[in-house]
Length: 232
Image 1 (cartoon, rainbow, N blue to C red):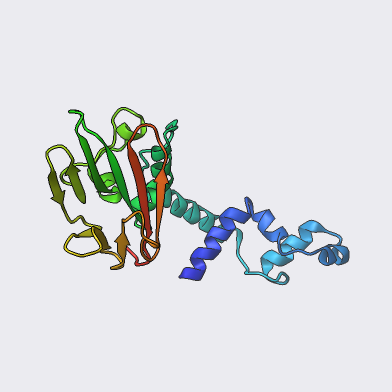
Image 2: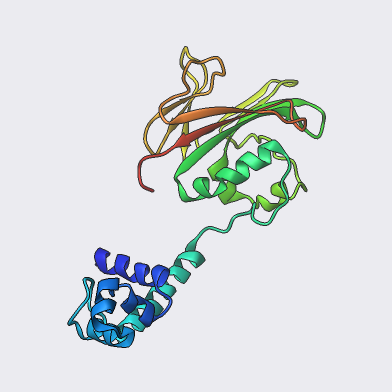
């Protein structure tokens, strides 16, 4: 079944017409002997010549139609990106746009660290599970610049520096680990790898890359991009 599917997609991507498919199995030597392009095509179609699979005209177009339907189905099933068709200039939002699809499909899980002020001009900081927020919120308002992305008490971690309010939560993708000597850690629920968020750490964990984002819209921003190996 897998081979048939691959062959079907090859027909769609390589050959626009049945004649092109037949021509792909006709060599220059064939033409030099036969001296007739149409005759060479007929021999391939009848199975008397050609190195590839013998496919009748009706079967070729039936496969082509099935393959086009399969490709269309994949396009429909692809996740809708909130960052699509947006003119994004902010460095943080550009990074989030670049990793949106990977976070939606489970190929990557990104932790966003943000330190900034809330609407009351209180300094807050927190760690956000990007993939969880993508599922629970409409991110178009962020990518369009209509709303500022800030940590919430329901995120992985939240701290209000003025009133010293602190929250720590587990999410569908991460477990918060607070009772250890190394400080705050997060454990991926997909592959059980530990994400070390200490900016001074030599490593931030297996398959995890830390990116410091320079932007004038926040006091401090960093991304912890964790590539997951387990299938969703």
